[in-house]
Image (tube, helix red, strand yellow):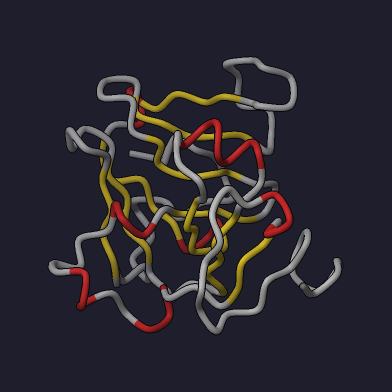
Length: 163
């Protein structure tokens, strides 16, 4: 069985893929494995994340698509392009479970922005260091102030004003 997400992702037949982490939606119908640590992790305060997540911010761990393998539920996956307001897989887009509605990830052109709260780490104190956020982005659009030692960028990390 092929991945169903295309050639950018690891196939279930890939013998070299060694699962390191497992994530799933709330109902468990959509599941995926990751074979590497995240490249980075950020907390985003942009208006789209606030609206789509119903929260003041979104925490995302960034992976290469080739490090992701969808293991269950490809037929339940739904896509939403927030720029065009279309339920289509037009990259970049939001990925969710069509059964329970859980937002699973943001799919970019080359990257997969996973939501660490969907991973099976056990207790919150067990979150690996590589998943811990390194900064806040779009902090100028924040709803609440966050008092931590992380850098706070007005837009994207490294290409906007450091607040």
